[in-house]
Length: 257
Image 1 (cartoon, rainbow, N blue to C red):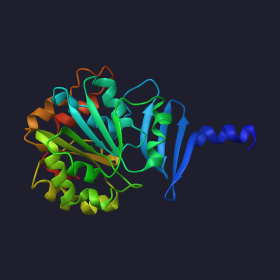
Image 2 (image 1 turned 90 degrees about the horizontal axis):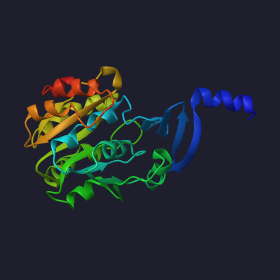
Image 3 (image 1 turned 120 degrees about the vertical axis):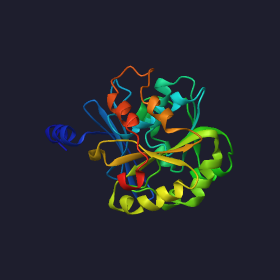
Image 4 (image 1 turned 180 degrees about the vertical axis):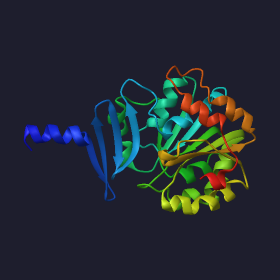
């Protein structure tokens, strides 16, 4: 590729920083201007903006949750490029984070994506099995496990819900990134119905254009506590859109998803 063509390609599609293949999937890290993304095939699994903590997308909406707990212990299922633990580490110095990732190829690329090691404890393994072995341990569980655009069906199962419930402490939160694909919409009602058997289920008020919904599943926490959390006093960047999403939290999740 000539320098002119290369320059044009990078301007249009981004500069390729790293690439691996895993079980037939192409995993890439690209940089375009201040934006850096990790893509699984053509699905964006992680995003960072140079010089910022926030991304302007769904990852940001998990950031208020640690403020609800003292010395929070957090489990993240699905590492991607590490956007979620990076954001939490940047704002909450007292947070203790375990991240479970099943794909070694993805796990091997996060340092390239973030640009430095995370303080978080990265664990290779199956997220559901990990939860089943850790009872009453976490304040927050964040579920962001995907293959392309859709969450594997095992993460929508009763087994996942039961394991998450018992892995949480007496008061805790299971937070789920839920994508609004056609399959996601078809499975939404059955998922929220199953979650409601164990949790109080709330939906954040996010822009429809985002293509994602963050579902908050409460174990012993009232909706008012979530409303207050959106302020994130430790975060200096403008985050009114996050505060608005938490203030307008809804229980009408089966229709809203």
